[in-house]
Amino acid sequence: MKKILITGANGQLGNALRETLPKVEHVECLFASRSEVNIADRKSLEDVKHSYNPDYVINCAAYTAVDKAETDEKNAFSINADALKLIADTFAEAKIIHFSTDYTYHASEGPPIVEEQTTRPQGIYALSKLDGEKILRVCHTRGLIIRTSWVYHHAGHNFVKTMLRLGSERPSLTIVDDQVGAPTYAMDIASMISIIIEKDLNKPYPIEVWNETYNFSNQAEISWYTFAEAIKAETPGFTADLVPVSTEFYGSPAPRPPYSVLSLEKIKRVFGIEIQTWKSSLLKCLERINQ
Ligand SMILES: NC(=O)c1ccc[n+]([C@@H]2O[C@H](COP(=O)([O-])OP(=O)(O)OC[C@H]3O[C@@H](n4cnc5c(N)ncnc54)[C@H](OP(=O)(O)O)[C@@H]3O)[C@@H](O)[C@H]2O)c1
Image (cartoon, rainbow, N blue to C red; front, side, top):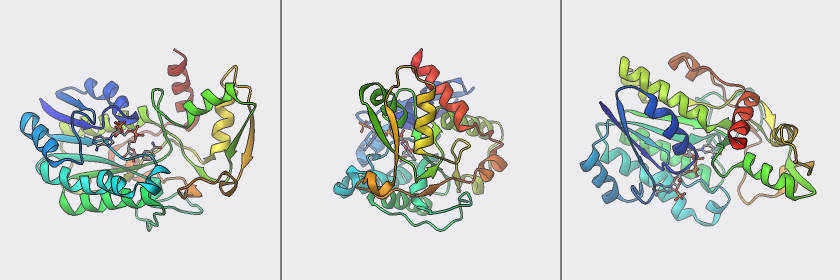
C-alpha cells in the first residue's frame, strides 16, 4: 500500500479528493484539516512525517482569500510561499502535488495560455502563489504543480454557490463581463489527480514528468457573466436580473487577470487526461447541490 497525505483537506479540493482517491487501488489516505496539519508549522509537518511517512503529499492547503490577502501579506506569503519550503524539506523523499493559479500568468488576451508563457502576477495572492511554485521547484525534484482557474465545488464557498444564494434573494446582481476564463469543477481536478496517481503506481513516471508544471481547467472561454447566465438558466427560483459590468466598475481590491483561458494540451498529452466541458461539469455540480 502507498500512503497519501492530503493537506488542507476541508477545502473544496480536499473534499473532492475525499471522494475520488479512496477508489484508487493500493493506496491509503490521510486527509488532514488545518487543525490536524498546519503547513506553515515545521513541527506539525514533522509530526505527521514521523507518524505517517507518506509516499505522496497532495497540498490542497492555501491562503485563498484573494482580496483579503492585499492587507494580510504576511499570512498569505507564509502559507502560499514559505510553507512550500517546509513541505519540500520535510517530505524530501515523497512525490508532491501542489496547486497554483491562472493568476500567476495575468494575461490580457489570447491565445490560450501555455505553461511556458511569461508570468506577470499582480496582487499579493498571485505573487505569493508564484513564490510558492518557485520555492517548490528549487527545494524538491518531484514537485508536480497544477495551475488551475475559477474552482468551484458543490460543498464549497465559490461563485456558483454565491449565485444560487443571491439569485433568489436580490432583485438584481452585477456580474463582471470583461474577464474571460474557464471555470473548473473541483471533482474534475480530483478525478485527474486520481488518474495521475493510479498511472504512477502502475508504471512510475520519470522524474522529469514530476518536476513540471501543468495547466488544468474545464474546457471553456467564457466570462463570469456568461457563467452566471448558465447557472440562472438551470435554477428555478433564480429571479434576480443579471447586469453585466466591467471589472473597473465592480472594483475588487485585488487585480484580476482579464484573460485566463489555459491551454490544456500538455496535461492531455502527458497523462492522457480527458477534459470536461464547463457546461457538463456545471450541470453535474448543480445536480449534486440539488440532491
Ligand atoms: N478557489 C479557486 O478559485 C482557485 C483558483 C485557482 C487555483 N486555486 C488553488 O487551488 C488550491 C485549492 O483551492 P480550494 O478552492 O480548494 O481552496 P479552499 O477551499 O480555500 O481550501 C483551502 C484549505 O486550506 C486550508 N488552510 C489554510 N491555511 C492552512 C494551513 N496553514 N495549514 C493547513 N491548511 C490550511 C484552509 O483551512 P481553513 O478553512 O481552516 O482556512 C482550507 O480548508 C489552492 O492552492 C488554490 O490556490 C484555487
